[in-house]
Length: 83
Image (cartoon, rainbow, N blue to C red; front, top):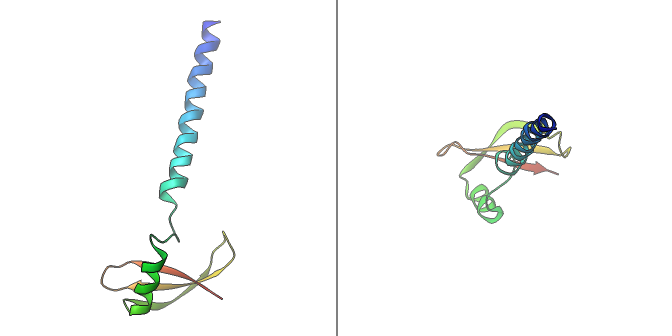
């Protein structure tokens, strides 16, 4: 009986840790196209800090086309959907 409980705890803990790491990666590290502040990003794009690149791609997640803008000062990239 003690061996069974030990195995359940051992494998159960691994599943819990895996699910926690999965949630953590989804919550904090998958920020490809998220902007910190929509209003500030729009101001930066319109002010001329960002220049359009020739890079256009289709995001497989939502199927939209995106134009890439690049800030030469900071190296930051913005992904703007194209209608």
